[in-house]
Length: 334
Image (cartoon, rainbow, N blue to C red; front, side):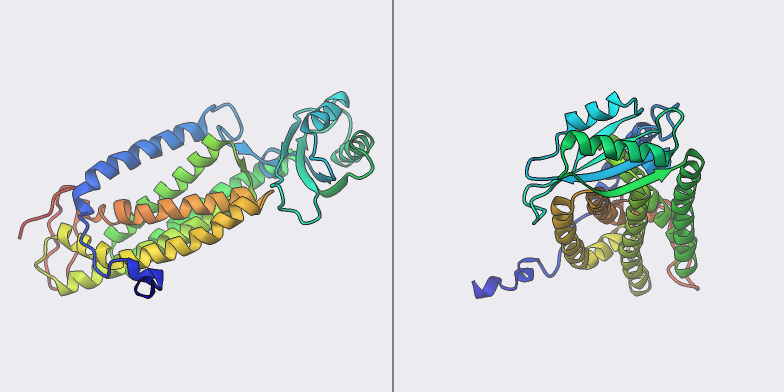
């Protein structure tokens, strides 16, 4: 047993995977996934959030979180109670994980619009009174929110702008640190990660809120960090192996950074996996988005950001001629 501990010894110290050889295949797969994610995100186009299940932050309306004990929350009873009051756009969901709350309480969330002729404050007050009457005096309200339509529209626009500005600033950073080819590669990788994360929320129906925007911004930061590590090694090898074909050099650089990529990613995934399972409530979409983002961010560093350098070629030094661009999936010949 001692020869297998620590477990990191099980990882090979040197690998020789041919990543570039399969770049065309995985590039086509990424393109299909990106197009599919865009479709599911924007369809139906007449909806304010398209295919996304936007939260109160972006749609406007009211939100009430509550808990009961000792029996689980009866979602049908909550829905019937609110519908009986004439509350519009009722959405009810439970986010309790058995045993996750040491107090033994069960949690649920209700979203709804305003009663006709009533303000958000009046609607929330009436809803809490009705739920207390129907669910019993043991019900507790842990969170209430009210967001107007104008504010929600501004929050949605600001959230999208934050993502766009983050990607552009990352591209400029990579451009100045390396070359313009690297900047374009990094931007394509980030677009790939962000769009696929949007697709995840559109397909699964998880709530898309400001917390989700924060998770996607975190994914952008993680992805660019992983890409910079790969690009740094490629730049070092460009100076070290001036005659090596660019495809082979990218393979060498990816293999040299592979163990670091695996260890960093797996460590983060362990923590996020626990948070996704036991976090519950608003933390669950946040953790799932980060978990998914780290996986696709690692993938894009290997099969999007790095191979895309083959399309334009890169400089091997101030006095060297620019490397001749080559086709994806093929190594250049000296």
